[in-house]
Amino acid sequence: MCGILGAIRDRNVTESLLKGLETLEYRGYDSAGIFIRSKDSHQLCRTVGATRELREKIGNQLPEGTLGIGHTRWATHGKPSERNAHPHPCGNVFIVHNGIVENSDSLRKWLSGQTVFCSDTDTETIGRLIDFLMTRDNLSLLEATRRAIPLLDGAYSFLVTSGSGEQSIVAVQNGLPLLVGKTARGGIFFSSDMSAFPAEIISIIALAHGDIVCFGEGENNDEFFRAFEKTRERISVDRSVPEQEGKGFYPTYMFKEICEQPKVLQSLLCQSIVSRGAELDIAFPENIEAKLANVRRILIVGCGTSYHAGLLGKYMIESLGEIPVEVEIGSEFRYRDPYLGQGDLLLAITQSGETADTLGAIRMANDRGIPVVSLVNVPGSSAVRESSASFLLQAGPEFGVASTKTFLAQVCVMTLFALKLAKHAESKTGSTRTALLEELRNIP
Image (cartoon, rainbow, N blue to C red):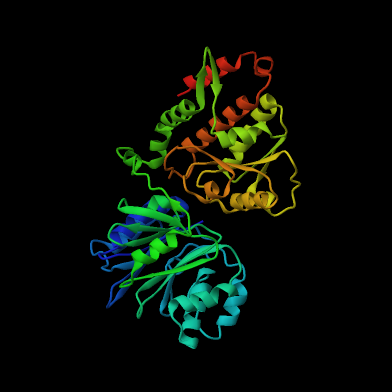
């Protein structure tokens, strides 16, 4: 998992990219870099470590340019080092990438007679391939990228631009998330996560699987964006919680997020627990209520922390709800042939809504006609868009590597699901449902 950014606008993009990379740091912090281009020159700066080290290396002299791409890396191919950091220079092509190119070894062997590789990454094979096609066949950046895609295996997204000639950025989404945002003045931003967009973004669209789009300086990007917006999902931009941005007076994001836990739980419980006369009850969105009413078996899928929240959910739902529950790590579920039948419900748990293996499980369930309810923290994410119904945790941004408030929110919702399904809560626990819900309301 890596973070990628790009920008084209009418003024310097460097500070916007650096701030965006700081937001994306949770997606990888073993190295970072930016490529900035003006009409007459370009600058590339890469470093081992997080964006703090990148800022220190740049110093007070920010590169000047109206086009740029940036990256924060979680290494998969090649150890953390400056030579393996993105953006990768590949002849006249510069690239940032998230995902895996599964046939990179064979591509590297094929291209080794045509070019010299400077890193150990699979990313460089994409850039070298595009540069080779541009040079050999005298192609534009966009056309060379289009011809390169069928030669690449795997799930990925990337941004590619050039060091001279046409001033444009080509964006490719092939299974991993990539968003495009527009400013009121016609500036275009790209990001793998909505949280990295600057506050001036007024409209966001999510690229679909297989999309290849090009935005360039001097072109009518606004008109192209509007046309593209008609065929892709538009994501609402919510600026109602600016106090959540940054660490504020807290020393670390993790400590800040621990301190936010009571507020997160209070919000969840207030929206889900309602009074019906003298009794308390649970009210979920109508589409989730309908899915739970007909369920005979629940399959919970998650990765990492979300998987462990699912295990706690299994214990509570089976005990209180008396419904069989299976819990699997997303990568195990999607790469075997699980039995899925009538009455099954897939419960997908993912903080970001972009976890690749969890999305793979969602798509498998969709293909087999199994309803999916996603438990997710990021509105507008792929999990929200691709699920039958979604329960939004509304925990706010979480940047701490160890999940705190989101994990607690997931466990809270699992508890609510169990109590919603419970038919014999009093005989099981010794307390009425109302008493149990009253205890829950006191937790914050």
